[in-house]
Image (cartoon, rainbow, N blue to C red):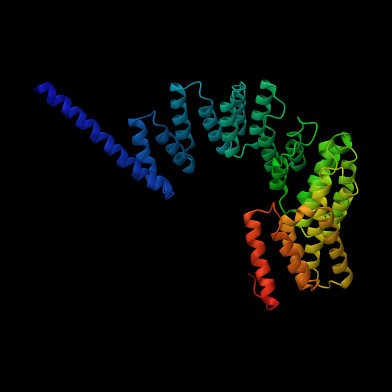
Length: 402
């Protein structure tokens, strides 16, 4: 009976102590969140004495001590942790950061060097150490960490994107750009993966100065390796980002002379230029693709793209003239004569709308839609859209559609 009572008492006491510790921690954490460090410190000291292995207590108490500039106590806290975990490089980093904040840079750098010597190629460890350095604004040491690990595992470019961000933080923008670009150099032919461009765009944004630096960095790489296909592609890309469309077209022309898939870069440029309402270059690139001839697999796509460009240009023009309208009408007629199967495509609806709204030929618009509806291979959605459009046009003419 006595033994059972003692067991129950001990269990109850343990539960009580845990609840009390949690209550103290919640109070200390609240003070920490409020940045009331002086009230948080004694509670954390008590908690860490009760449970020195608790990671949350340790990290919070260290934060409090550094905020209070109690560097001697902070150092003692870390040293005690190191006695139980001497192989933990992250604890060494904590010690180094204390020295750095306490203006003891030489001692801090000695510790940082010790940490760097623990790098062995293990990716998880490398990432933790590099992120810790970066979090404490030790960018140079974060770079050293990643570069050393990459050298050990001997995988070129493995940390290029992470290093690019660090070099950008450091202010070496050209180096950051070069690293992003080199990340894609394992492929001798542009792979179509837009991740590199997305990363570059995140670096340059809308900053004209950064865009110009990116252009210079790419030009420098291209000058060093003029045969590099991907550098040429990126140069045309950065020109488009800068809205230097004519220069982008010149670069694409050079690319097309070496292209494995002729016409691909013309189409890419045409679509990019059209999205920015750069109609002149969009049309120029499209026409260059068309000149490659019907044997090119992108020829039909280019013919359709040409109509889209001309129509969008007409719609956005503040001074559309008769010649512009007549030219587009001829192009529509030529395309649908060459590709009668296009009567089952959405472009037909645009053709009919052009005839109705710009050529003012309601009868022709109606005839086009009626012809589309007897096309065998049209899908249900297309037929539904076309019927609605035809109904509207017939209503304008005062007719009922059966």
